[in-house]
Length: 493
Image 1 (tube, rainbow, N blue to C red):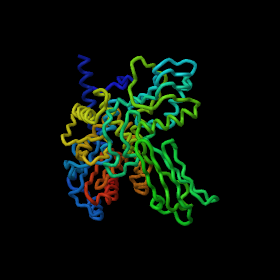
Image 2: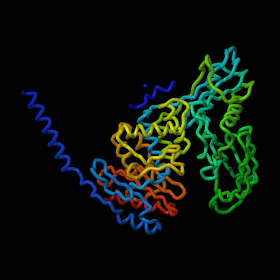
Image 3: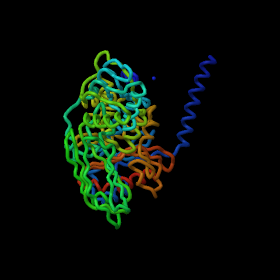
Image 4: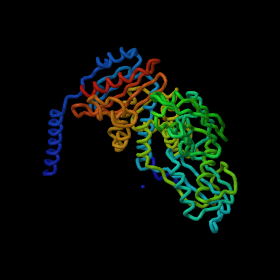
């Protein structure tokens, strides 16, 4: 049964007529089949354009898995290596997002709640202020500001106690942000958290000033625990790879950080930006709360610490998230790993109760699949985002998932969340001059030694076709022209 979105505490003549109706239905079906375009012929081998593209990319045919299945057809049109167990990279997000749309519902909302731990008299909260998070995947600085603004609107000005952060909805396990690719300050490596704000990121904006012959570095939000050193030189000439011309050093711990910038920056580059994940979750919120609350004329008498909402605490204000359908769109269009991990953990917490764990979420998804008759024994889910070295699935099963999704009530939300060729998301710059431009909704995946696409193509005859392509090989970085050749072949077939 689907999980309830509101369950988180958190809306004789009769015989002749019947025979005639049955016969009419059979006749209409026969006419429809006769009038319909012919289905794909089955190709267990790869299409010739794909073979040629593989050869040019120096990718052996044995390294790729391809699954092509027209909606409504009895058999796949192409099934090459489709039962090989492979790392799908970010196409694994299709499993997580489709499961969430069915189990939680497209209108599901997360709430972040603010409680008073004592009486509120004349603007003074005589006790702690407790913020409780439920895993909102996309709580921005603006959302956090709105929560604090609502507190001020409800009369809270001076907090005589502590700021208590209740992050208990997710299990707080040890997380090494550099374990995956030795890039601990990249925002995509940020650990999930029940009270995640702004992906725990700060953005450095590089603003050239030709009159002052300098480059300003504007860090937002500029938290009190972050120091900035700027030794960038403004130069003339072509922009080129602006990031490669800079020397960026990020040092720090959970409590403090220093961002140091040096090197050359060309005036022609205009304004550019780079984001970093720094500080611990508690320290990030502490700095942000301090800055925003002071701007609003508020004071905090105590410290910032972790804890839980105590019995008897009074709910003062709450901030709700975007709908799940909007969250899923951001996850799939832009392949947002942090949001996908937040969503993945939410599934387990809603199904089995807090605190959320990866095991609960993996079990929830596998039980949901089995209830739909989709048994994927090889499926390995580590975090549900595809940003993993151990997640596994076959192209065949990913294709079967997409076939099932097409028959689901949440099909419109899922398809609308996928990047559209030559239009938006991670497919925006691809196939702009091809006939398949604007005709394929495809989730992309990219890791070292892995490239993948999975989604739906509306072909030249108006047939909707499921397409999955996965390659695991040291030359996988050459695979984009191969993927493009496959999409064009499907469209023109």
